[in-house]
Image (cartoon, rainbow over all chains, first blue to last red; front, top):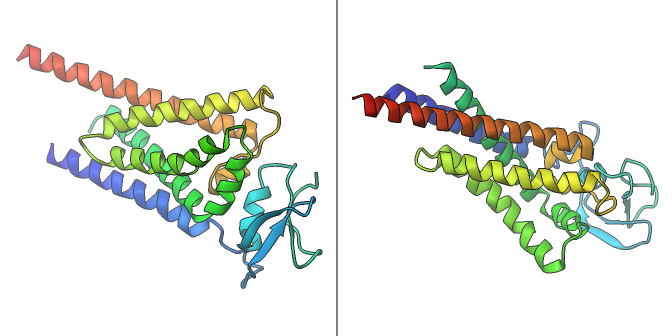
Length: 86
Length: 148
């Protein structure tokens, strides 16, 4: 009975570490090619401000699930998020 | 340790880690999450409520599943939440709202709506399996008590 409780506790702690740890390790981190990322403001194709002071990796997350939305940097027309243009 | 206990542990493990992953990655890119929620077909007030209520619920249910006293209730609530998310995705799939960006966290945000539906259905199935095994264990324990 005590062993079962210990196993349950161990599984629970591992689940917490796996979930939160993976999120912290992977979310919004720059890719290997971009060691230093610059924070920018991101606008849509109507020039409306969408994201403020975030790196490209975070802006990429915003565009990833939809082909309808793609952002570009406010200060540089050559920098835009990956994906399809609307 | 029986096979039933191992499967049940796996159900709790998957649900806890998935909910914590989703909540933490939403909170880490909170600005993106808020903008995505604003694009969902909800009223402004309801959208604002959901921007903190969804991560809070995910964290709360994950913590409940870690504790001994509330793990079963946590499993019921988590499965209910997954059914709600799945119902919403089904409505999106049937173009009830038109095209809407997903408000998911981390790697889940890279899934298409169909992939997301399959992902959710997998977790709904895990939830039902966990509930079934919990109930079965409960009834077996009651039978043992009655036999004594």
